[in-house]
Length: 311
Image (tube, rainbow, N blue to C red; front, side):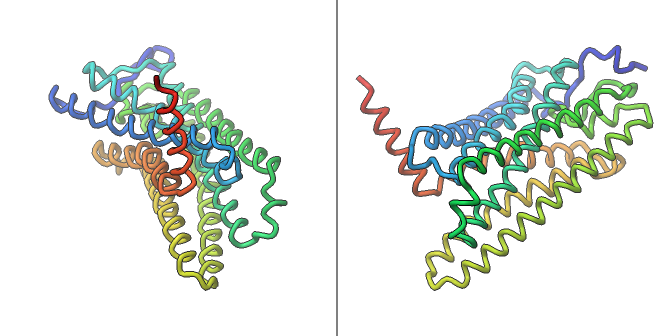
């Protein structure tokens, strides 16, 4: 049986068995990837170039767009390349880098979503204190804390996972290197250490989720006391989609990382992984920004400027 020192590459889960389906999956993933790149890229450009969007809310949206770009760019390009070239291989170092980057971007994004819920809570429930609580220094500190939390979490889990001896082969039953699938290859009882780390991380994540839900409940209570029905509609149309995508992310990631390995199946694992790794980065630009009037105005100005610069 091979051990981790003799493994030079891993074999990922093929998305299809026939060449025609492989090419179909390639084009589908390419379309999703380009849509995510376009949406998050437009948001990043609009916020960076329009001075009127240099506010705490849009500063956090810029960070969210960058994290979404990193998250989806960690998994889909390799999956597309494997589907296009009819291969399954990823190097040992590439697999470790994929685990590190994916966990980093995903953890930082979740921390940032928690901060964004606090920003909306202060803006709606404590508007008189907003300028004090959410000044530029506080926003920069919170954003740095989100990125730092993602980095520390990623270092911890990547080092813990790839320090384990692997003697159950090199076949990863997923379209990207996912920690639960790598743990299945371990032949050492020390993999329980990483399981404890995962449970601890998800306990913190659940605490953040409770904080987000409580923040939105307070927002809903405040909005319902307002006389304007337009304010009701704006708050509910914004907050409810946020909660829906966040609930999807938390529930599917929990299934992927916390379910018993005996309850695993390739189709279930693949579906869950697509839902928590691909769907949120693709939907976030639509839910958080593309329906926003200020973002639309900034993008139209950028388009007009680009057309004006053409010869």
